[in-house]
Image (cartoon, one colour):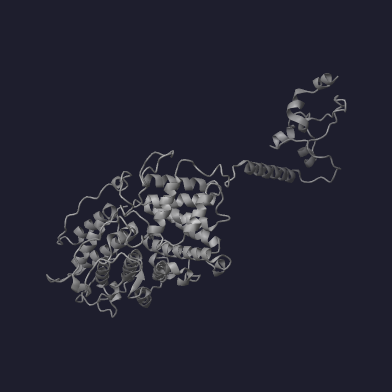
Length: 601
């Protein structure tokens, strides 16, 4: 009897179930008389259902609706607008489908989704973390070593931790100064390759994972730091559109989190509050430097308190140098950058003279910091003075009879003299880790000096140290720093040859290939093997395995004190500000053109 009752079911009813079945089943399993009723959509629309209950009705088919019989019959009610009901039904079904699709997606926090096994080993991660704290931490003091270790432990089950670690490793590996330990690729899926290639792979991995989850709606401090590391990596790769995107992303995420408000730092522990405050000011400095280099607008302002030396007594020297760096860039606000980008008018001579004075006052005569921080501070100071002078000349405010040297045509010669005096005190290792960011500043100063020398007939006696000597020293410096020969030396030599054809030029070797710089077969200890580095990176003084100081002549009587190599110790006491400022006869410059320097990229 049971078999006979089952055989009475139609094939359609077995496959589709009750949604498309009008008939009812008796307790004995026999098919009861069919009771005709409208499907859910037709019932809701108050129209006659044209169907047999076994397949979608004609009304639902024509209206692109899902035909179901799930609703419980209700009493009849007043008729409504059928078109409005159709739109409502479509929207409800669309929302249901979207919700179902989201539930089917693999969660971004899933531990099985995050790691791409075989990309990096624990030894690689440790090497990258050690390199960051040994080299970049003084000018980028945004990570806490113990908490970085905790983050590494969470990267298998936390997407933010995974992206932070991957971006940090990419940032370190893209810098050719880092050398992986022997056997670093053993047990990995990736083949042995240069740190540059592996760094690019890790950068792409970070971007891939970030696309799979919404990190914008609820960002964390890890989110901001990851974006900053992606900026630094692309800056090193000379991909400036992508670098700018990630820098702007980092500043925007910081504002979303409220890091531009002082109240943001009141509700967390001291270590976390300190690192976040430093992160905001690092973004502040980086954005201003990049705005001047690439003519970009600003988003962050000096709206929170500076870090204090009392935050960490063990890092007083590093914090002191970092605070000086912030103060150096504070004068370059929306007003100056707007004038620089030609987005604002109303520039005045007193305003520019005030900015020049602020730059002079930003750094003390005796600077206590690490040697690498002193390099960044002294070179950035002279570069910023050059940028202000360029804006002054573009506005037509310079004069041969100016009362202030900063508003005279000869000022770039004084800048070049101070820059050469400063760099003569620094070891090559302290300069080289700053990479193309530092070299680009030297290039700008050298180009400005070349233009001034081309317009001003400089009389230089045989035994005097003058503009040509400064230009030769900067040429020597750029040619010796890794990355300088690749991009900046050729256009600078071309400019000098075109502008100063009578100037004798020493011979320079052809630049090495980029592939040679990033040769993965190198076996020496970690040291600066290229200038393609962080725009603001710095190592501790006396880092092992680094090249010897640059040896170029600098006469003792120019600076007024003997020139010696700075001791490899922390703190590093810098005295280059004591150089006298009365070196040259007055020079008259007329019809000096505006400047635009191209590096061929």
